[in-house]
Image (cartoon, rainbow, N blue to C red):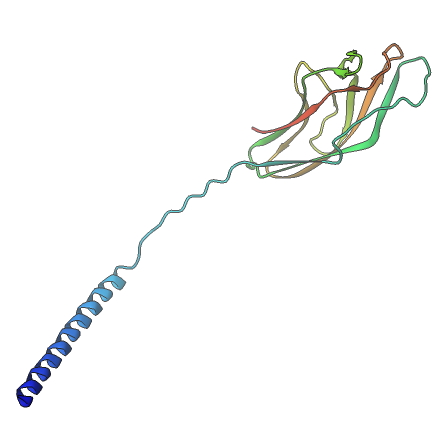
Amino acid sequence: MRRAEYQVRKKRGATRKLICFFLLAWTGLTLGQLLAQSTASLGVTVQVARRFRIEISTSQVSFTRSSSTGVPQTIPANEGRFDLTVKTNNDYSSSTNVWFQVSSDLVDSATGYTIPVEKISWQAQGSGFYSGQLSKAAPALVARFTGPGSFTGYLYFFFAEDPNMAPGAYRTTVTILVEGV
């Protein structure tokens, strides 16, 4: 029995070796075929949206009369220069417009009295920046640039006061709007 058992084991071992050889040969052939066919094209698309960032030196502009002369005065803003920076990744052939948009006159919340917002104007310094005046009727163009970059302008606000205006603390909100065209 031992000899017969030995021969069966020997045949099984040989068969296993033969099966392993065929498996390795077939696997090698398949890997070889896969490696021979290993090139392909892949298209990649990335869409980057237009972005704008607004930076301002202060979120408050205020005016205080320094003396009472009894005649109209042009009063500069207490804060002095207002720095406005717009950063954009806009296309080289596209424009960026910056607007001041206001929806109401200056209002004293204690009395309800109003002052026309058109009494506030500004002088501008910086390439692409414009001087102007606030208006409820339409947004006021502050700046226009072409292409991407960082654009900084300096605005000096003024209030055209009249001695006939009622005393009070008048307020309104101005929205800075940036658009790519």
